[in-house]
Image (tube, rainbow, N blue to C red; front, top):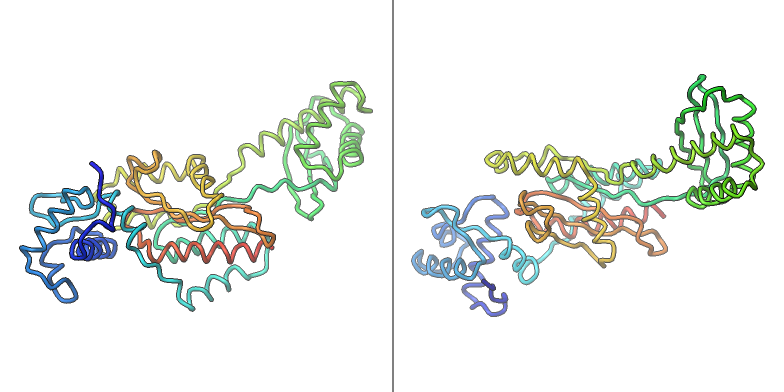
Length: 347
């Protein structure tokens, strides 16, 4: 079945469809003819309204969950509403000030990302998500400090001042001299390179026998490389806040759907891949229900927008996830505004 374009509907059908969708997004409940003919509704009899509702249902835009119930928009209908009817409303001045004030608080960028995810959740009533920008700082210094006979702490200092600590296992019998030699080798020969560049050069030098490391030092450096690479691959790329808001009254009747969605959020990888597909968008993108295979069973929607640094480069994506009855007209511009505000914070 192919739904007609919104522009092909009569003015009466278009208006009734708009009212059904807006009422559903507000209440989460099916909308009946009596509601539509009430105060603020359309100036038609309930019988005439029912006739139009049946027409819209036949076009695949509305559905009736039960024989005697009202109608609610299908995912196809929601897409038509979002693309052809919805009128967005910019965040209020108070909301804009609140977003900018919270993101303007001094602190590390990681704190700003956490704050952004919480802001999105609070303002949307859904779960907020921020994909952490890929950062590959250039090394300034590397220190290896022995913790005990089996472990050492590797301290990586980037040229931007960022510090990362990682614990590695030590080869049996590793001496303090080997630790010092490995630290000096990495710092003196690889400073100014990214971890990826450092890994490539270290591997090449060790493989060719050109490194000045002894056998113990080579094993230590190679073991460190393996830990660094594994750590980077497993590092969470997504910050999610507000999962509990997915458990509203409407969701309690379909708890398995919500449990499946929360499992998806916990795994993060598939959600991160979905957000990453919004990187090339000029503004917020909307994914509704089964339009994306990830939500074919959970009936959820995602609104996502890229955020850029001051030079206009996309460094990450943020958004919200919730039921398909999200208030799209309010949430879409709020996501866009938050993306712009975070971009100013990142610099």
